[in-house]
Length: 525
Image (cartoon, rainbow, N blue to C red; front, side, top):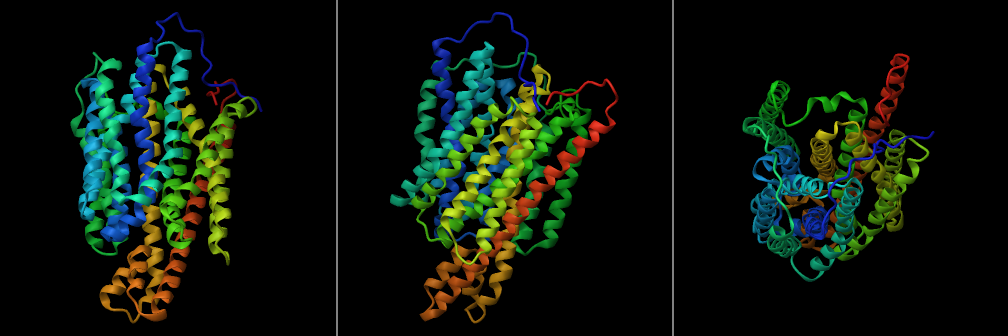
């Protein structure tokens, strides 16, 4: 089935073409994108070292891993609105400065609380980087063809960060302490602060109205309250406190949604969600990144703690999946010539489900096979690429041009929120399964040792090192088996979530075609 590209537009009138300064400015904009992309990869590899050094609880580890992502997801729309008022270049430079400051706090953290604080600051400032770079590109490259090239370079910088991030992190962890992975932000920040004012123009919306401070605060606090409730449940204590936080978070979310519906200038354009294809795309991208981030958190630990790889080796073995993602991104435009974007998106979902299923089969099998584990990650990444690219394409194509920036922010928020929820919910599920399975093997240990072994696999390995004779070997074997069970449950749940998204899209698409009146306009696919 052929499909007309939703990006086909009538020829635009002659516009000013980008100058050499604009192209140099594009290279400057690549720096923060590259930095943000590397951050998630280096943290996954550093997680085992962080656990060994700081000994965070299971809940604290989840805050360390997803505190950044939740702050980005909760602040993205607000930061976009702030940039309209103070200027995109100014917001970019302020954001990258505070990002570097948060990185320094994280690098030299002595306690889990300090590391969580640094990650939160990095998340707040990181939310200013994405909308600022994209908005600057749209202003600098008025010519449609040049803008397409510029956006291609912008997008490729994220892939490059994903490609080099694991290798750089592995090398740093091989020679230095875990905090060294956060110091990469410092030279990037200094370089951007020097060349940014010279090569980047300033853009702001002269017609921008008053910023909705209350609405932004409501959305952020609602998200944080709900996440706090999830963390308390994951910790296995304070259930009453968790229930109160959940009620407060849900209440704030309802109030925020009602406020946005009544606001004259809401942070999110309500018309955006009237297109069913936009809703399908958001559903697919959000749930796919939910599965990706939730499984990646445990995958890095599985490679090092179960298969016994060093951080450098684990980083190198993640490269095939990054290359697979790049291949999936390249094949998307080829498939568009024969299939609709919604069909390609559905195929990507099914491919990613297959990858998760292979993970489960390997973990439950009698032998841990590194080659099969890598193959599973390659399959998952190959399916992820068309889901991300086609969902973004669908959202932007079915939005009024003057609201394309807002639509892009919504798409990115869905990705960030889905990824953060994946770490929180699937991570909490993994912690719960691990504790349940490993509990029986801690009988007979000292109370402190038993409590530590039930926290994480890293803690169990540390406790086992202090036990005499075969007792330590037995604890290691049981703890690794418990972690494998937790990983299998997480991967199986991720597969079911993506299958549910796929089934929903198929059912709703078929139903919408049946009820569409004869002669009704078809939304571009």
